[in-house]
Image 1 (tube, one colour):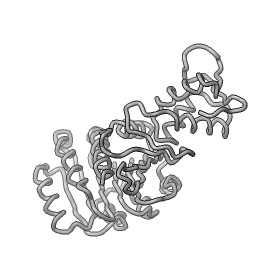
Image 2 (tube, rainbow, N blue to C red):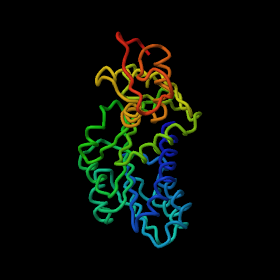
Image 3 (cartoon, rainbow, N blue to C red):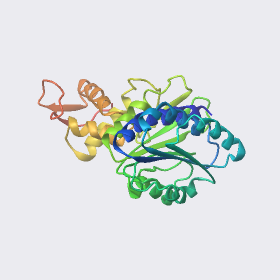
Image 4 (cartoon, rainbow, N blue to C red):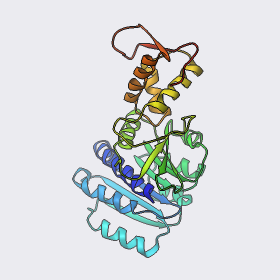
Amino acid sequence: MPTDAVLRELLVRHLEVWLPGVAHRARRATVALAYAGDDAGTPEAALGVVAEYVDRLRGRQLTVVVLAGGGTELAGRLGAAEAALPSEVTVHLVPGGPDRLPVALKAAGAAGAPLLSYVDGPVDPAVLRGAAGGRPAELLLVSSGPVPSTRPALVDAGFPLVTEVDLVPADETPARRLAFATGFDRSLEAFKEALWAVDEYAGVRYRDPADPASRVLDIAADPEPGPLRRELLAELARSGPRTVTELRRYALTSTVYRAADAVRALTGLLASGAVTRDPEHGRLGGDVVVTAAAPASAA
């Protein structure tokens, strides 16, 4: 499926940011990969990234836990990838699906140290709580088929920052929802940068679950701002006037867009007369207050 390649690329890109940070601040860490169905080659892609950073892992312990039903075929693939890794990296293949993740993480001693989890399967509160047990913890959660927002379950599990995006294949195969959960603005921003840096010819487009019009977006370095304009207008209607800083944070934490994209969207809204600003002139800095025009016009 086209979404498999995009999910694999996003996991690789996030590991490329996460691993150097872990190597800098922690003596041990865990990567957990759990699949209810086909693993689509992501475990060996993840181990390939680990192999690229082995020099930074010297003197530290990284445990990689893989939960899947691939049997001997998956074991053979992981064995070949594991052969290139140093003794500081331990790989555990655990038969079964994501429901076994909490037990596997406890056995791996993951609690209290950095933990990055990738879970492709049903939204299970026990699994989410297990993935939140790292210090710090981050999670990539993949759901198939039409699903409600995973944000409430992830927040309840202990992840204060969550973003969601639907991956919509051009070949009309079913869309899949990807959620990223973390406790740090910096990690969320890094994930958003990776999201919009994916291969634009991958045969997948994005849909923001928060967009009331459900418009599908092409992957691009500068994504089309229409949905974000609508979402910012809706936020201003709900909450009243907001500073540019507050709207940038709203874009980061509540939409598929980056904080920087909010400035482009606000510039368009100001040009159309849909919003006003105070002060009226000068740079669109963080302390500028933005108000929805009355009556609000369409973005």
